[in-house]
Length: 216
Image 1: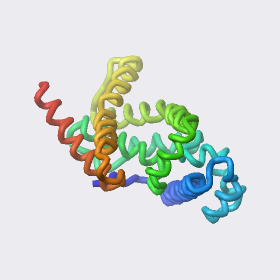
Image 2: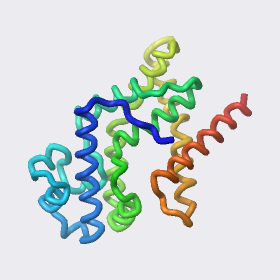
Image 3: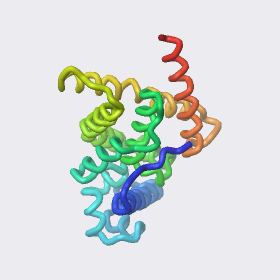
Image 4: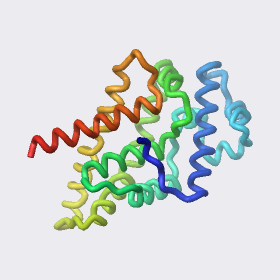
């Protein structure tokens, strides 16, 4: 089952426009090559003005990876993590689904993932750019998770303990998502689409919870 974002109409429209520009960039660069594609061509394909393009991405490279650093996105991401529904009974399950949803919030799902991986294989610096940009939002993810945990009634001795515990929880609850993507990639007989990622994630969650139960 896919995780659906809880967001305002304005936030959804912003996310959808960003996804449309990202998808246009991926399609054009895959078909014509990085050097042949300009911002103007991407904007035209996405049916937006060049000025609108720059409201979402500072460069064509950022449009290709589908990420950009933005205070507005950072604030929206933190709110999203705090308020994401439905809240699940088990904390580790709840945070695992929330972390997956947070990455979907940041990364548009509309682009062809096969094409994007092919582009990053041709241009490794784009993969590095994606990783660096994701790290930019790590503090918003940690803060959002801490507030989500505290809303469930969990208290910490002090801020330092809260920060360390929340960071460890985030790392732990990222395991099902990482395992799901690894499992889906190794299955070379089928295309890596959203349905396969959903199936792999749900399977990984079940395995994760089973292992935690057995380790008690």
